[in-house]
Amino acid sequence: MNYSTSDTIVNALSFDIEDWFHMVEIEAVSDTEKWSSYPTLVERYTDWILEQLDNTGVNATFFMLGWIADKYPELVKRIASGGHELASHSYWHRRVDILNRKEFYLDTKQSIDAIEQRSGQKVLGFRAPSFSITPGAEWAFDVMHDLDLMYDASLFPVSRGHGGYPCPHKPHEFVGAPSGKPMMELPMSTMKIGPKRLAFSGGGYMRLLPSWVIKRGFAQMHRQGLPTVVYLHPRDFATDAPRVTMPLHRKFKSYVGLKGTKKKLNMLLTNYRFDTCAKLLNLSSDLTTCSPKNELT
Ligand SMILES: [Zn+2]
Image (cartoon, rainbow, N blue to C red; front, side):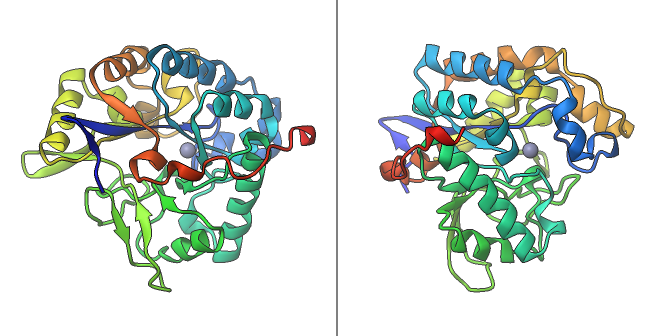
């Protein structure tokens, strides 16, 4: 795989498109029947993100919940018409490692169908809610093969609240599926600080860490000739998001540093080169193979 163009590494920019109430294992927002009655921020902040990308001529991957694609079909079309990649972030935002094989198949298929119908793009990639492909859930890769997915971006190579998976800290072929079939894997980036490794380029990690640490993380990756994978959510920018009742450590991680995220995204867009996950993995040639079924909306 060749990630660099001239002397500059091209990184992967991704957004997990969900609303403020799509939080894994938080009781207060777990009743899916109530989701439609909540105030929403996902369109407003995704449109803001699209504007920043448009202004800087950058394309990104939008890992979208099928639930969001069904509820906001016009948003999917706006993302697609900006030249961005649409990928799956599941339908209901449930942890993969608590589902069985059939449940995971049905959920992921429902999300792919919802996204493809609105975008006209073939979905190539998947990212598990909360990076929840953990040891023991390798069967999920075989389900992805069954669904004709080409890459996964769910592995988190250091331990975290919802698991983590010991794997190489760089894009690689994952060969741990029960069938032995390889799948392209774009794991989260990590940086070395002393004896430890730490995520630095997404979500709560990016909100918490000062810009100089994030830049150091990029520099470490680039010195090894590797791209950095960035992931953010619309709610990472939402200082006005409703506050959800949850344990203190989750509260800190959910709401720390919201004010600085817009500035950090613009710092990244100014300082580094980015493209979609599919492009980074040389998978982009076939992004528009299914035709949009606009009338279904
Ligand atoms: Zn998510």
